[in-house]
Length: 75
Image 1 (cartoon, rainbow, N blue to C red):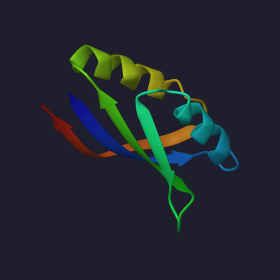
Image 2 (cartoon, rainbow, N blue to C red):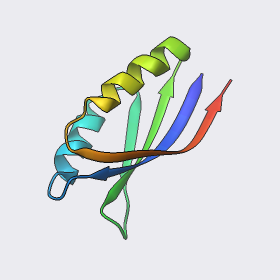
Image 3 (tube, helix red, strand yellow):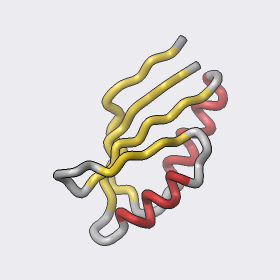
Image 4 (tube, rainbow, N blue to C red):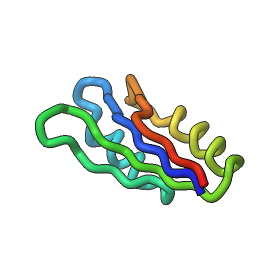
């Protein structure tokens, strides 16, 4: 199992659409930051191939300007 956390920065005015796109991915859980215009994203995948596939899908989400990984753990 791989669990990773990210800070997600969106283009101006696109935060809600980015949040909706990320919520639609079953491996993702998001929390909006209270004091910044960004999202905290936590992902979970069962193995390396699923993680790589998820990363490719995250790269395709329109409106993300920066996806900064802040932690990762693999079992």
